[in-house]
Length: 170
Image 1 (spheres, rainbow, N blue to C red):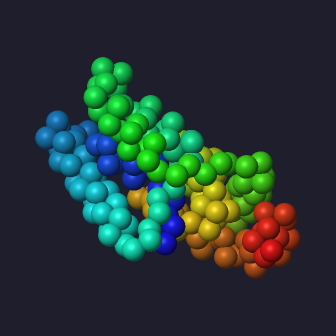
Image 2 (cartoon, one colour; image 1 turned 180 degrees about the vertical axis):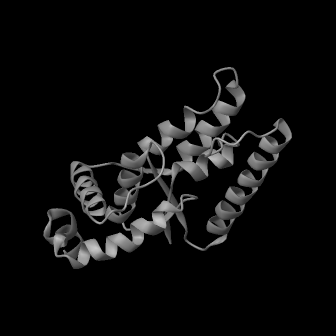
């Protein structure tokens, strides 16, 4: 099976994740949260790697998003992370994907579906990248479940006559 790893899973693997709310947490709580997130991400990656013929894909945006979270003074960690990410196959974000991400985002907004966080546009882009290349997306983002539901409705609305979806039929 072919998988697209979302940035949040990669960041968790690197132990770089940040809390998603404004609640104060002690240093111990922060370390525990990061440790749990890293273990969960490692389990997900291990499960994928144990699958026969599994392949891991990212796009260059995931590559940049993940590596930029590593502090400048952590050279060894950066090199190791970069080497790992270099081993993943990178798919291009073609103009068709950008166009479809825009249309799908507009469709979702028209249905009252908005994603949490500052990276909404990027989430739509990653989602549509995975759809374009027919990859199963691996993410810790609960919003992607909403996108899966909306994507089915998006396809049912005959919005799939775009070149993006016609490519899939050939």
